[in-house]
Image (cartoon, rainbow, N blue to C red; front, side, top):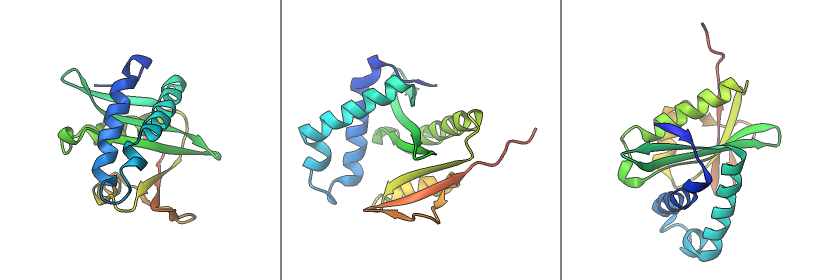
Length: 158
């Protein structure tokens, strides 16, 4: 089941985000950059704001939040800002279901182009996004240590 996150979900959302990020940042960045108290507080504030905007989707499996996705407009363009799945739920379709729900929301809002940044060492995520139709952004292929990808949404045919 995919649903909008609520304020009551915030602890679970932040915990999932922290656990998922540790899987791809560990060994590449200092732990404090993704596990330190300041970073967790910053993350919590960001997730709280996104939940308040109604821009966070949760995938629920067996009564727990198994995946989260957040999106929003920045500089006139829609961005997929977060998509994380509990590592224990990888390869079970959670990410694909969340992604499809985001695409559905974007299409309903008339969005035709979406961008995202993905850590350049996170090959698992890059493969996932490629399978979902994302390609390197021709205008801005990199942003620091992240690759910038673009998804062009085709108009739905009836």
